[in-house]
Image 1: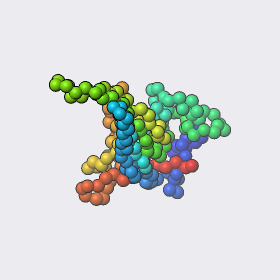
Image 2 (image 1 turned 45 degrees about the vertical axis):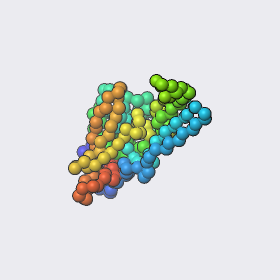
Image 3 (image 1 turned 90 degrees about the vertical axis):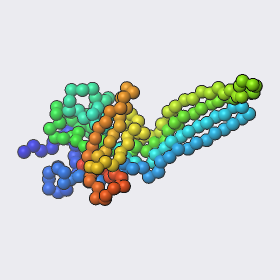
Image 4 (image 1 turned 60 degrees about the vertical axis):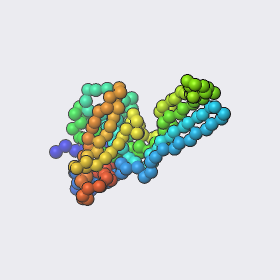
Length: 212
């Protein structure tokens, strides 16, 4: 029988001294408490400034990309945080050891990969100027310039908190959208089954929780 050792993640146990599905807990909610857009517009004579913010507050997301770049179990590029992985006795770090094929399951689906995906984003800002033209052929001419996705304020460590979207299917699957080089790939993570019939939304992610 293989036991966890130094350098392994310490998961919360229910008391049976075995880490399995019985230790899974409800750890978060992929649905935001509030979300929406904020529009504002300022005008001075023929100059107009339009600003659009969007936001989401209170939702959790599974960071699939980070689970791959910090898993430390395969021969693939890893993030720079893996430099701090456990590598010797007495080392204090929050990054577990890197082991081929991860026999202890340190990189398994757990609250290690669940993050607060709340964000505030300046989605677009547009500056326009209306030329005072009014004749037989032209009844107004406007020049404008626009910047999109100007900045985002978020604690989410993935590529984009806005693309971490969860929704309920017939088997309660979590769909994580990850943009990579202008393409979109899809990854799934099983959530708990809902006991309601129709019109239900996914509520909570079930996962292993680590000891603090």
